[in-house]
Image (cartoon, rainbow, N blue to C red; front, side, top):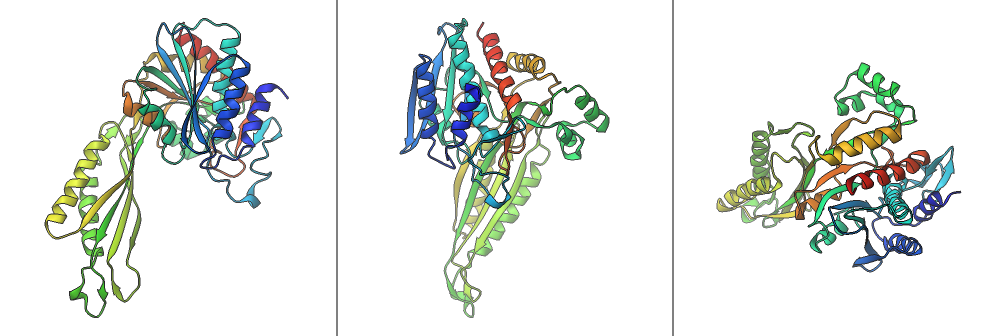
Amino acid sequence: MDEVVQALRDIVKMNTVNGAEKQVTDYIAALLAKHNIKSKLVEYAPGRASLVAEIGDGNGPVVGFDGHADVVALGDASKWKVDALSATIKDNLMIGRGTSDMKSGLMAGVWALIHLKDQNVPLHGTLRLMATVGEEYGQYGAKQLGEAGYANDLQTLIVGEPSGAAKQLLMQQQIQHMLQIDQAGAEKLAAANHTNEQHFIELAHKGSLTYTVHSNGVAAHSSMPEIGKNAITPLMAFYQKEEEYFASVKNYRNPVLGPVTPVVTMVRGGEQINTVPATADLSVKIRTIPELPNADMLIAIKEIIADLNAAGADLSLDVLSDLRPMHTMEDAPLVKIAKAVGEANLDQKLPLIGVPGGTDASSFLAFNPNIDVVVFGPGNITAHQVNEYVDLDMYHRFITIYEQMITELLH
C-alpha cells in the first residue's frame, strides 16, 4: 500500500464524528514535520483543533486550500457492508465514514503540499492549507480561522469537498436536472468520460439562514382560556406574515443556483391537550443566494416580529446560523485553471455547476467577500450515506490536480 493511501486509511479509522478532530490534525502536523513543513494548531475546544500550514516564497498571491476533519454520524451499522471506521479497501474503493466527505479531499491537499515542497517547485506567493473542525455542524473552525485573519489575504480558495458521482448516475433525471441537460446531453457527457466517475466543478453554492421564532404566552386550563394567553396564536400570525414575505421574494434567482429556498422545518407548542400553551416555537431553514442577501432577509423577519409584538405578541428571534452563498464567475482564472487541469487529469469534460449545500467557504467569505472559490475534490454523492466510499484512482488523480493548479496559480 502506498503512503498516500496508508495516510488516508489511518485518518478514516479515527472517529471524528462531530468532534475529536485533533486526532487528525495531530497526525497531519506530524506528517508535515517529517517533510520539514511547519504547521500551527488552532484549538477550538479540548480535543478539537484546526491546522494551518504554509509554503511558498511569500512574494505573490495567497492561495488557500480548505478541508475539514470532522465527519457525520456513522449511521445504522447493520446497513454497512463493513465496519464504518474500518477503511476497508475493495476493488480499489476505500469504504468508510468520511472517505468521501471529506478526508480524501483533505489528504489530497496535504499530499499536494508535501510533494510541492519536496520537489522544490517554485511558488511565487503562499499556499495556505487549512484543516478545520466542525464544518458539518456550524463551520466552527472556519469561523475561528476567519476571525484570526487567515481569510483576509486570500485571493483564491480551493475547497476539496467531494465533487463526483458514479458515471451511470448521469442517466438519472435528477442528475440531468441539476446539470440542466437532457438525456442526449447526459449520454454525450458519459461518452467523453473514460473513468468510472463523473466530476463537476462547483463554482457556486447556496448559503443558509437558520432561525427559530419563540412565542411566549400564559398557561391556563383549557376550560378557562380567557385567563391565559395562547402562545400558538401569535406564532401562527407570524407564520402567515412570513409566508407572504417568502412569496414576495420568490422571483429572486441566481443564474447558477436558481431561487432562494425557504422551508419551515419544525413547529412545536403546548404541553398537553387540556392546557393553554405557554410556549411555542417555529424553526426555518432558508437556502440563500447572492441576489437576496441574508442580512436583508433577517431585516424583513425582524420587522414582522416587531409589528406583531407591537400588537400584543411576545415573540423573539434566535438566529442559529447565518452562512453566505458563494458564486465565482466562470471567467475567473481559478475556474479556468481548475477546468483545464481537471479535464486533462480526469480524462472527462467537467461541467460548471451550482449546488444547494454549503461549505467552509461561506465562513471565509464572511471575512473576505472577494475570494474566488471552487469546490472540487475526490469523493462522490455517497457522502453522509451508509457504505460511503472514495475511488482511490480519483484520490491519486486529485493530488496531481491540486499540485498543478497551485503551481499555475503561484507561477
